[in-house]
Image (spheres, rainbow, N blue to C red):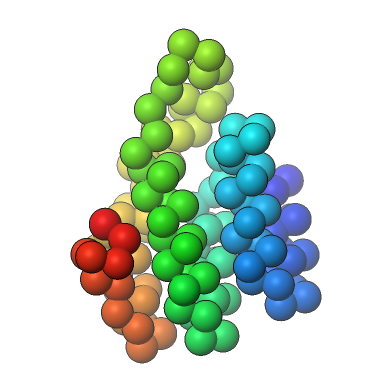
Length: 112
């Protein structure tokens, strides 16, 4: 699964690679990542003082939150996206709380 690939990138310390992979796999193949996977990338980024990689992941989360199905969307992707978009762990407030936990601020003008 995508989570295993992301874990591999994170285990070798390549946070930017994990960020790129999760975005590419969604954009090219409509593979919807679990919220846990995206949060883990943010946690690794912030724990390593890579605040811009954390914000990059937040920007991707915002892309997913604004996603709308089209006539080519298969029902499985639509269902997975609806579940993701309703997950409180990737809400604006939850993400801001996560950044504060690591000593950073995520302001509205940064991403939202």
